[in-house]
Length: 120
Image 1 (cartoon, rainbow, N blue to C red):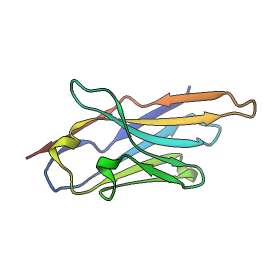
Image 2 (cartoon, rainbow, N blue to C red):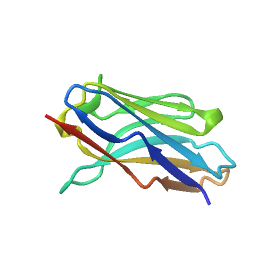
Image 3 (cartoon, helix red, strand yellow):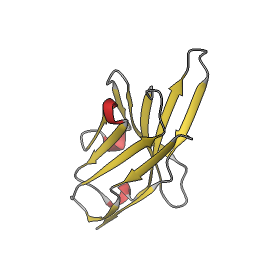
Image 4 (tube, one colour):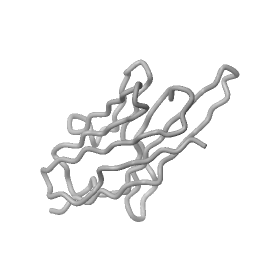
């Protein structure tokens, strides 16, 4: 049973930084695309950033220039470095991993979420 476990959330003042980690366990294959999503109270879950196994990254406009996504394939771990945090970044952050097998079947894995709170 593949599990994704996030860590690194917490409370930080505006302008501060946090680093989120997402570790995959029981993984016998390499995730194709990792992603971070977030959901603020009363809002839908939204994409924050993604990174492919080739290292191609994609960022949502609100976080461009402030957040950096990275991955360590050897450790099956993904990171999100968040700098210059703003109160509007407050949300539960979810780790996502997508695997596509040789039959092109897609498998979607999610972590349990980690709370990030940015105070003004």
